[in-house]
Image 1 (cartoon, rainbow over the protein chains, first blue to last red):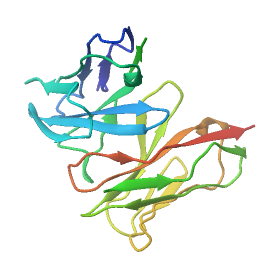
Image 2 (image 1 turned 30 degrees about the horizontal axis):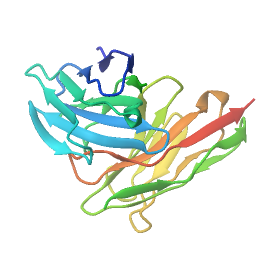
Image 3 (image 1 turned 60 degrees about the vertical axis):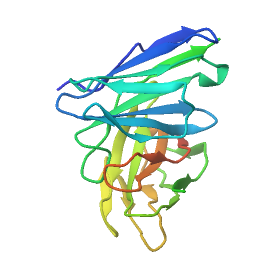
Length: 115
Length: 112
């Protein structure tokens, strides 16, 4: 079956702009999580959605937001972009959540560059 | 708060050498440890996991044993190959159906 699909793969934006990233989870998976990966901070959890509800949230400013649709597809939005938002954004899907009984499958990520 | 600490890289080894990447964690609740691998230009793949204390996860020749008493989940492989060159992340979920907390990652280079 198809894996986790993230679009676009690459983005270049200007400071102050906003951006929307998309994630299509594996069919049947209801949990979608987002992570930011940077060389300095490593992989940091942004938020998790389950059945269209945000279930968990990391320590990121309110400029970072997300949503999940009824088909489990998810989008994340970053407003008023800053240079420090340049990162690889990874989406992960799992059946019910990334706990011990379910595996989280990751997409290839969206590489965002803010100039 | 919950955290994962793993040995910093890069680690450079010759093919067929023995590999150990240390990983320790602090967590409340009932954590479940994982190892993920990231090959160049790709997302993360689950390498192995453990679900309870003293469990040994294994995959592709890699092994790790969940030691609750030392809060560790060290990754080992008896004979590495060039194709094992990648970044390895130790991770855990503090509780079931929780977010994943990652270590900083260890870059592994295997020389032919």
